[in-house]
Length: 497
Image (tube, rainbow, N blue to C red; front, top):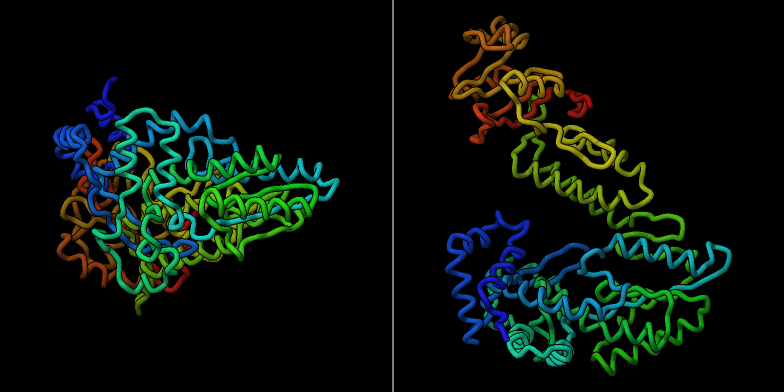
């Protein structure tokens, strides 16, 4: 039988691993000697001397505090190798309505399926139905690693993969963890959610691809029990949160007790005592960031508040107020990150009945109007040129359309003003007249060393500073908006869509 640990298999896993992460430091460091690293990893696996490297450990907060163990890049390549092999075996076994960490699934698909269940259970709201919503207490820290290994290997015959699974699953990342966050964050993490506090032999690290996949394998027994023993027609699960619907409230009470007993006996888990909800479907179901109703979705208030906090954080870091006016400082890194965050929330809001929500955010947070333009499907960056400009005049025209005020353009080692701005600057600021340039009837400017002096002179006016980057489109440098200075008026009033 051919070995699984060939260079070809590891290279395919490596390509999967670096997808959308090629710019990260760990991926770049591995890629410098990718061929040598993959051959060395292949030899370690073939010789069975491979052991996981120390993981980076930190506490992250989204909706709640979580302990994260981030494996090093070489270990992540091995994780992709494992999952690629196991998916072919386990995907046909999983039920259709398990929606976490599977291709073609996800939260949006789960919500749509739940809405479908709600309509069927209520016969399109013509009869009453109930839902049972359950959660497993401290799921990842409570998983028994030896039991998980037995479950995964029950469908395996390949001896190499069985050995590798023993190394990956039974590995305890806590003794040699590399801590990368401040000690204060650990104080907010409940003890029962930390692998440092659980009994020996329990717990999977959150943050690994394998942990997400193994969670589905571990709870597959529960899925099969609910579908085939309890014969629940309307059931779906996302990680350790699951929902069952039925016409009878009493049936759901019985199912809850059966599920609790099954988890305790077969999987050594227990239901969360405070998250066992039985309620009418007509009340709506609070799940996966939405309030789900048969006819429509609403975004949870908690999600909206998180969005507002994120926007406020960006606003406070980018807007500076002084005696001369308000400065909006824009760096490409922060601008790109802000854009990614806003489009992520746009995707979340777009699945719900939230036509006025994004409009309300733009009305409340003026920085959004200053930096972005609302499109039907996306939020686009106002100051990023979406095409390759043919010349300097095309670049200037792009910014001229979007800003009502003076535009200062960096051209090489000069800061220049064009056309009517140049004529005005010659008269009022005594700026140096520059030779004509294609497309412009007037130019004036100063050397970039005098940038602070120029800023002081025009601080009484509204101006936009456009800097030149090192990236070149053919012969034209890419330029980006670096600073917007507004005198007295509200900052959003200077822009037009």
